[in-house]
Image 1 (tube, rainbow, N blue to C red):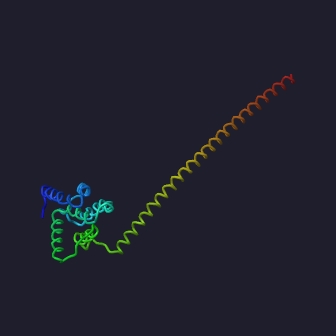
Image 2 (cartoon, rainbow, N blue to C red; image 1 turned 120 degrees about the vertical axis):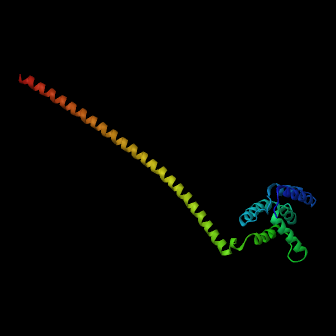
Image 3 (tube, one colour; image 1 turned 45 degrees about the vertical axis):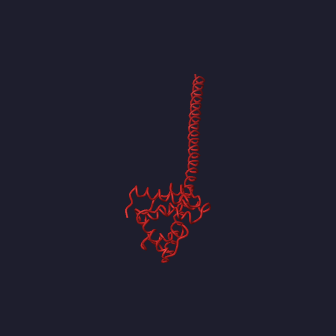
Length: 207
């Protein structure tokens, strides 16, 4: 069954009137209908997982304020298309006593998971554990990278300090060597001047 925008608006208005009469849950109705999108036009496994993930995050904080029945009623009001047909057929089977009644959001989640997720998309407990192990390994790897980055940063800082000290010592050595050459040059000049003076005095004595 394909639902146009007008079809969805009709369902939304119908549910708005119907749901607003139950237990004064107007605030709940406003919260869910403003945040939870329709589900049913695309019922592929990925679309279902995304919708269920977003819906569960939104309804979890509501459990402390509203009953499971109220939350369930409002969540299922977001069904359109094939999801709406599935839910109506299931409710009919419940009335006929052919299947069990769903009373909580998490029962709905389990039932929808079985219906909308094919076996090829499901994972076993062992696979789930392996995935969690891989996630833990990934987290540890990221932490090690962060630790290595900090160590690398500290190493570079210490290396810069060491190189700076080394440059200072080399500069000091060059300056000392330059001063030493100047002193040796001055001593040489003084010695040459003294030798010339002595030579002149000897010539005068000879005369």
